[in-house]
Image 1 (cartoon, one colour):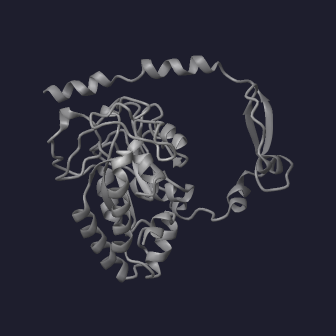
Image 2 (spheres, one colour):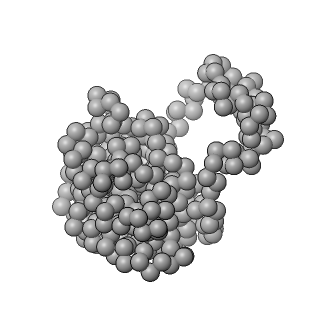
Length: 328
């Protein structure tokens, strides 16, 4: 049963569709892993076994109908950062201020996940009100990196990244204002995407900086991240900043091999900043020489002042403007 947690999400989809496993089996395996591993990692603030198994049973009923239009995430477990509203559940944003608060409605992305039949396992730890880059600043304790318990996983979406990296869930949701998906994805060795602003509705998300916040996926594979983005993206009339742009189905029909995926880059030039000094990998050299599909490489591009690029983050995050509303 534990081997099920090592599958990629699209592999889970294939086995669920073929009837080789059930969503209940898959969900149980991940719940067991999360409960067993959370003492050391502190990645989860709540694991809702009863609700998750009920969702899994509902997904199995839908899978039994063999609907060819079913979304790839039907029956697949997912974890949510604890600033995503789930009706009837907690939403602490990593803070004691919201301890005991019960969300009266579902966030837009929660609605989307329910509609495609994904199984929500629970809520993950995070820096308090998303203000942090290491996940050491949650009111419920720090999160540990599964690759080295003495190091940080990055933040503020550290719990969501760790849940995926530690095989507690194949997919999870984080939010990114100034790096809070991308940084923990890098530190935990997984895939993380901050979508273009407006691609995913912020309705039902506890805000940090409303003009910069964005919701995005964590996964262990780019195809899986794309499938989760496909499920949650799209226009929402309750968020005036969400983009009225169709969500392309290509996100759930990506190339399965590296060479096929890179074919569209053939003839393009890959810019590498001057002065970094990192050697190219064997694969990058092969691509640059045209021996494998992909872009050529150009190493002599001017690099902007790295120190100057850090300054705007501290001056463009008006968190106080959002947090003041919690006192009213």
